[in-house]
Image 1 (cartoon, one colour):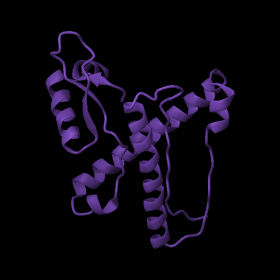
Image 2 (cartoon, rainbow, N blue to C red):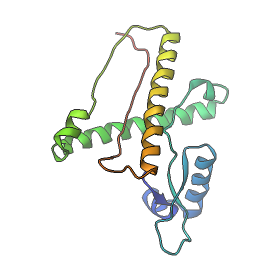
Image 3 (cartoon, rainbow, N blue to C red):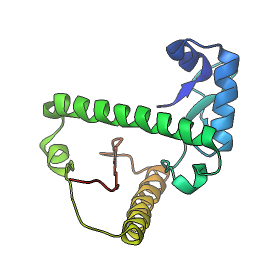
Length: 163
């Protein structure tokens, strides 16, 4: 979601503006979105943007409520589809980006053999690294350093699998 207002989102999902506004406020309560600078001149619409950092879904947050576990799984599938579409779009449009951006892009897969504790520690370290870069970039941008900045998606998954 880029900066948007409830009426635009309501149109996209074919729902009432009041319902979308309600859900945006709930997402804001959970820290997933935040109010953005108004994009319209009349100032009547509330504009929203993703929160200053991404999101993580942790099993322990869902384990005591089956309805949340089902919603979490559905949300995870939707996000995975969106991530795949986003990366496919990048691949299709890759030649429109400069050589510098194409060289900076990351696409890798690692298949380490870890314990559950090691995977949890890895997740915490990766989260800390991403937070560091996100916070530094946002501070630089707030200070006026906008030259060469683009939106960047970083998708990481770490999960067990069997051969």
